Length: 611
Image (cartoon, rainbow, N blue to C red; front, side):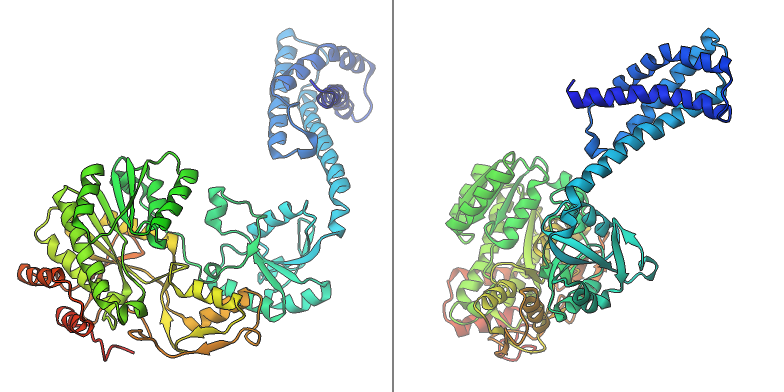
């Protein structure tokens, strides 16, 4: 036992005696008769060692008083209660005279108060010594929000030398004028400019992880308009997972403003689909493919086969998996989905049972002019060959990652993905393998998306280029998209949904020009400093994206964020044969490719698409 623990033990031994004598004193209204006084002193001879032994048994001296907490209070209550029962048992069994029953009750109450009060007083003293000066140091900061997240933040920032919380703002009038961990709730969020000027604060922290995206956006706009730097606490799912603590404040990201509800996965069902299975992910080096791989790894597959035609992308994800998912066996395979021989070798070597096909050419303008034939061969023929090899090697499920650009397509990329959907639906009619198609819109931060482009333009000092003031897109986060793909893959295993197209709930469409303004603000600039330039629609680009074609309807599924599109059935056997012959002929003339696409996908209008 070190000297601190010995000192604490001696303190509690003294407390036992003092509280026992005080119980007698209080029982007789501060006028203790001599006969009872004699008994009180005599009984201390066995009561003190008996209770001290109980306290030692309950481990009261393993803690540190400076960090005394509710857990320590709980142990004190249990130890005192146990020792009080022992004392009472001895008194009644031995029939000790002149020990009033009220003393047996008062003594443990006094003891709990004395022992816990001493520890709390010591902790308060130490915190005052350690942090009293710190409260006068650090950068003054306002906290927006006065809920549970704000309380946790204040507790963790109490020891910070970087930040000094000077007040909180919350729209709940019932909290105004209250104190949270010593910091006052000053008023509404709309008062942020006035309060920041009064308190000389240049920073605000959004402590509103559970608030709606509208509320967070409003708070950001008010703070940005006041010229304040805006930080935020981590999201609730990160806090609950234990990956981060609430004090790990960071800059506000676009995802915080678009905020979408956390995906609820059927973990039990996905374990049944993936656990112990060999899973193949094509395009595994891309943003969607790599996130799919991370999500699948959680379900402990027998082996994860990562397939991509980019050596560097595969190397990057291999390094990541070796560090973060060391227990999951992986195989990194370089190859092209158009190579039937390479695919056959992969299936013979690893025997994948579940296939997630994310490999595709997806950049609209790049595929529109000069690369139309490659887009069709990769997105359609590559899908077809992969599906054929998978079926020939007894794979159970084939999940095609599609796009909202396949709906009423006005570009080659969208038309090629729609044709891939039709091929999978056509193959389902003659296949025992389950085909599942998942269609969704843009994902935040994916390779080639508008978000990384805006970041680069802002870093260069602008301008930020937007093709049209009215152009809108649907967005979701990469993890959300990957999780819903897995969920759709599970649902597509049911016989009644084989070959169907699953449509993800993308929420509300977002104006790209608003997205640009948000990113400029989040980067700490104004629109005067970083200009927005309207450049005009690019080849094949729509003003708005659709998740359903004109003739399509949806049916609900058990999952609130997934619906089934009642789309046109797949291509019949004759049409499939003609299409295959055309694809195998390696068409290269761009005009003829687009004309053929227009014949195969009637809704595709290369010249007069929806603008």
